[in-house]
Length: 221
Image (cartoon, rainbow, N blue to C red; front, side, top):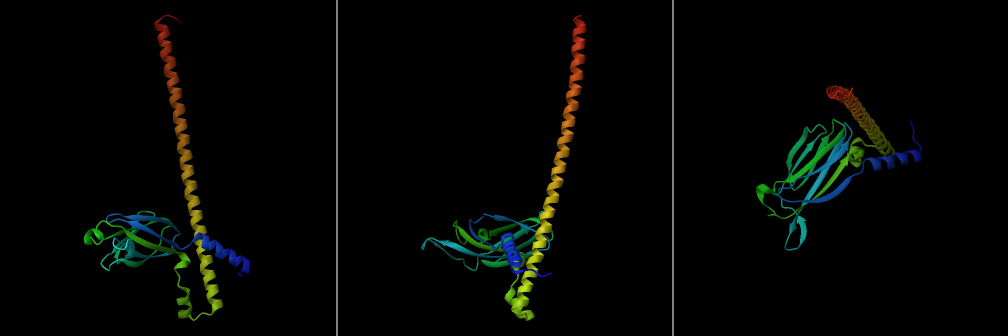
């Protein structure tokens, strides 16, 4: 199937919106743990890169961390199963592949409680997370497979289309789960309404019998 130039451009824009490269930084204390949620389709590669900086009181700025400082990375899948738990250095790179679609939890914390390297100060962590086809190193692929520029463009486009298909499958999966949750909720509401109606009927019958007995005892009827 051949795509026109406008269609290909639209595909590229859609991919850029769906799977951007998430670059950010955050601050953590000695015992603090930071976690992030990434919604990832199944069978999708994720690469995370980070670097750390320590607050320097003398210069009042963040400086590159000492080699002894490390970061622990822990990743859980949507079923809270740990798929990666490893200690890295002050700068590191971690990789994993999702096998279950849904929200993956990525957590980082330092080993400063053991080494006391920044004595109650703050640690700045720069984190960059790449998902899907953004994890591919296309210059390296082109050099390895000896691809021409046109062949490389086609390879990129095919990878992007494949990632869009995975995203569409994931959206269908989310819609199916939402539909099942809605049906389950509606069914519970229905049974609760029926139970309330039965309780009202039983209460009404009991009140009528009680009033009848009361009036008979008072010889009003």
